[in-house]
Image (cartoon, rainbow, N blue to C red; front, side, top):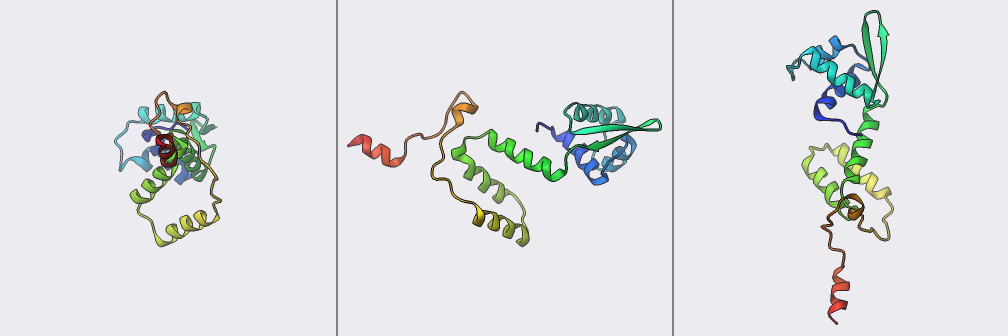
Length: 150
């Protein structure tokens, strides 16, 4: 799901309102953005083209409705993030996200519960060459390096 930061502002407003017209969206985001109505319409057009929003006509206005929930979008963005890094670096990404976030006790418990339910993989293979042209992983484990010197 490739949504820009500006498009995300629009999506958050629409998720809050459930469905909305351009005027409603403009009022909702006015305090944090000084975007013109034309800018908002451009962003809405992009989101419709990306099939993240649908439109229905109500009188002379278009009403924009999300095609997926905020929770579904967050899940897709999380998967997109993981798709951009080597599988061997997932733990680093996850711990950095946890360190960077302000989390309540309830949120920490939710994370702890998810970890407790997670079955560990027997082996995680490097897949960064599938994702980019340059690999930065250490493909050889410490044990293999020792064995090479013997």
